[in-house]
Length: 298
Image (tube, rainbow, N blue to C red; front, side, top):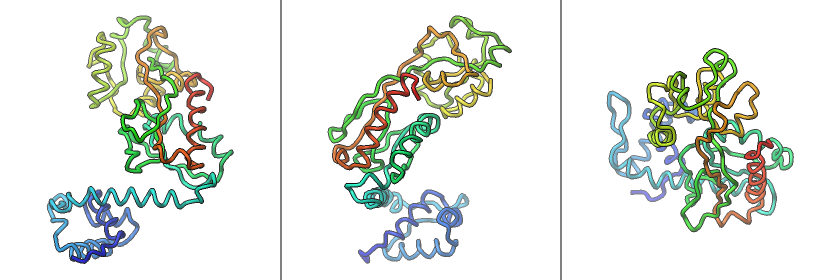
């Protein structure tokens, strides 16, 4: 086997693995299908193995291909981190910073918080990785992360920002149409919006509010932004973070004395990144901005 394996070929390999066909990979990479096929055939020749077999559903990765995915992903993360680090001199507040955050915070909250930061530091580019699973900071998947729980790895440094209260909210039009429940028993007569296949969230609702029945959830989705949009569309009563819901004049908190749940809010960074100016500056800024978000100053 030729040990000089091109990183470009490995990138093509990962995209084909993700997309499942040469044509889909070509569209994502912005090249022709024959180019993708040639790259994969060249990589297979160098490795002395077959990476993909054809099936009625497209390309099926071989066992060897699946085994190579892990080191290829590690190289991809290292390459991305290399590019972010090289995007500006280390002593300047400039360049790219990658932030891992949940889909709801990344969609509904963080853009508002970052507007002032961008005015203060226009040379810093923000990469948002929206994912409800945790990015691996130890593997440089992100430079810092906003999480709902503290890290357990010793190499990570975390700051607890506070707690995010969760409440029940409905649109004024829904309340006018269906009435305003004043107790949990009243909720039995209402349409609810909640999780679909997220078993952890469904179990949390069952434990916190056992009075609610599955059939009451008329709109189900595991996307928190979609749940929020459904509430704003007057489709029912949903669970929303109080600080963002209270900004919407068209939303009314249902049973306001009921505190459904509280999430911890943590800002996490790798200990090696604390002294990099662009990352430390964003970390400190978000710590203050997220704290203001929790008390309704956004």
